[in-house]
Amino acid sequence: MFWNNHIETLSDDELAALQLKRLKWTIRQAEKVPFYRTQLREAGLHADDIRSLDDAGRLPFTRKQDLREGYPFGFFAVPLKQIVRIHTTSGTTGKPTVVGYTRQDLDNWAEMMARDLTMVGLSDDDVFQNALGYGLFTGGLGFHYGAEKIGMTVIPSATGNTKRQIEMIMDFGVTAINSTPSYGMRLAEVAEEMGVELDTLRVGIFGAEPWSDNMRKELEERLGITAYDSYGMSEMYGPGASFECEERNGLHFWHDSYLVEIIDPETGEVLGPGERGELVVTPLVKEAMPLIRYRTGDITMLMEDRCPCGRGQKIARIMGRSDDMLVIRGVNVFPSQIEHVLLSLPEVGEQFMVYIDRMHHLDEMNIEVEINRECFSGELKDLAKLQKRVAGALRDTLGLRTSVTLVEPGTLPRFEGKAKRVIDRRGEVW
Amino acid sequence: MEYKSEYVIKQISVFSENRPGRLAAIAEALREKNINIFAFSIAEANGFGVVRALVNNPEQAHETLTEMGFMVSFTDVIAVKMRDEPGGLYETARILGDAGVNIEYSYAYSGKDAAVLVLRVDQAEEAIEQIIKHGGNLLSRSLFS
Image: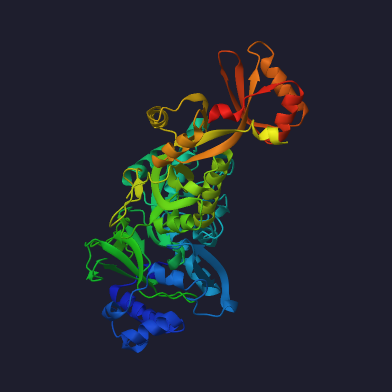
């Protein structure tokens, strides 16, 4: 099934022409942003210098760090008056990254999501439970508008209250569910505990965190669904930039809206199909916040074979990260953010260790911190208060519940050279 | 009011992660300095604990444990002699309760001639005054230095 048959199956020539036209438009749009004006001037490039798609390789990269430095609105190419929505995502340190959307951007996003959902066989006959966070996180609203666009009956259930989620699936006859893969596992577990069968459910969409093929098998068996992988990030509007089709062998990218490259993360050299590297994306239709060659940090590759479904080139499922970003219950966390929080708290040292485990299919993050000797009163209740305070500060910055362990000063490992502060014990996920 | 400070005793409080061998390390250090422990307790919270002890030489204990890298601090407590028979604890607890003194924590030991109740209270002076007024016995700080 196609939502937009024409654009989803453009011939190579048609697509290249469209991409080139839109790339030039994007560069002109980017020139309204001081950061890009400087970058392009330094590179000696104008929109008119781009004569073929190969010229894209001459454009400078944009990094997450750059976006953070533009906080809050430094990357907006339109006046705030034309921005109709803002989302934020965690940055590499204390400050979040802000993304803005014009009305046209929201339409573009919903259009892509409509293609995605139609591609996995959903339509106005379906009842869709959207169990991703609504709010600043792009997951909830991103799916919501696409799901409404194709006429599904949408239940904005968001996350949490798992029993109620199960009841809704049964009472409302839900046919398709969207969540993080770990929350999908949780739903399966609670349904089993409740001793209920989710007979109406037939499609599951999972994203926002990496998941393995083993997890897919388990989700499918336990929930009685066909499971699809979805991919995206706030910088590309949000989820839906890339999605599996019914073949479930790689994710289609919407090439009319994104120029996709794979590069060697060390050298920046552009790699060919079948070569594993960092995904670099230039959105081609973004008005509010155009980006040029955005380095996603995600490791994947362009797939060589054409997909039998007739749509464009696919990428492999995400295989890892080129940086130290962690994905905890769907939330992006950088170890530097943790360091930043600890530095702001005089009662604890700046050394820390992070342990990540998967308990009951949900990621749990435990952070060990050293107490500052001068701050020890000898009272247990002061320690308990401190523990709460650290966890609270981390929650405020990371947007994530963590557990905090207080340890004796001088007992955490000190690193010379590259620190290994994160011990991820979740096993095979990437 | 002077006499009251005589009954304020320095307890040492030591932070300890909740894992095997920590108490042994503390106890060994005290043994090596020939420090005697009169009373002690461990209070446990989420993954860590505080070891509290009354010792015969709190200053030396503080110094030794600090040198070893432990986090140590002094906490003011009082120690009340109780009759080591039914109702002994009640007598002391009632005095404090009637006086509106709140007990934050407490531990006890049973010695040769009496049982001793170690108390961390919110108003130490008031507690001392009330116990003396009601004919109770407090241990003097000179025993612990």
